[in-house]
Image 1 (cartoon, rainbow, N blue to C red):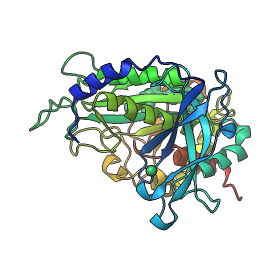
Image 2: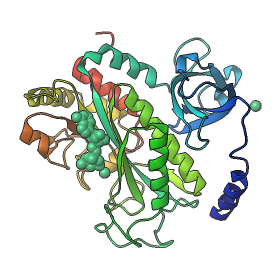
Image 3: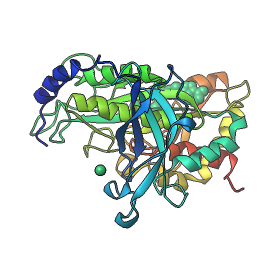
Image 4: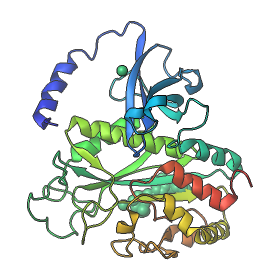
Length: 364
Ligand code: ADP
Ligand code: MN
Ligand code: MN
Ligand code: MN
Ligand code: MN
């Protein structure tokens, strides 16, 4: 597509004239869903305005879309239903418009094949008494419209890794405006974003969301991903969640998943952390199967990863599958970090299988 940074900038100036027009009692609701490839999609509809904060997902209309255009349904039976599950203030249309996260359902009343939320929600409900907290670290790479990481020479490579992680200054980081705008968009929308940092590979960044309780983790991470793509669109930049965007001596991108339960967060919690790690060890293959596509290129045992076919754990060990933070080991309670998930994994699948492995399947 022949869009340039300049054309986006001039559009923004034109649009600004219309931002403050009275909406005459109506609001714009942007319905967001997850497609067959793990991208977010969205479309808008008009709803009656309600007093601020009064939108409940179960009171919002169920909607639909053409699933044959997103790889989610066949052409002859193409309607996929959008069932609202969470509502957020829309940072792109302040102050009164909303973002509506929706689950995808088929016409026969079963969850769509790519609706991983439904199963996750059941697991979270079944095991709610453990009060599961999650914190996810989303790594990503910013690409230009030619799919080249920002700041990388057209031919050749930047200087080796070292100065870029948490880097400050020209030549070390790129596109900080996108990161800042995304941070603010998340805060405005009520996403529990807990921080951001520049990553080890140039043009790679990270944001963290959490701690979130149960199903809220997947919802918030998907919303944060939507916001990132939408913010980057304004800067004519692409967001890649490829787990190994550049082969060779360049760090991959992960989705480290931090986890704790009420028992683990109390004094003496280490024995619950160790018990959970034992269970994870017994289902390593099953976890890897849902921890992202192309993860074998990333989990090599180098570049701060554990190897894909071995399960390892350790205190403060960033080359292991599971890391117990030094501070938690010292205190004897807290949380642990599952470092295996790739940047493109589905947070519903990750948090769901962690619950299943630690506490049992829905039908057990
Ligand atoms: P790292 O040192 O691995 O880079 P980060 O600071 O990037 O860690 O991310 C840590 C994540 O762990 C944050 O999202 C934070 O909210 C989350 N976290 C902190 N305490 C807990 C806890 N008790 N249970 C689950 N997640 C937690
Ligand atoms: Mn149409
Ligand atoms: Mn981190
Ligand atoms: Mn990181
Ligand atoms: Mn981490």
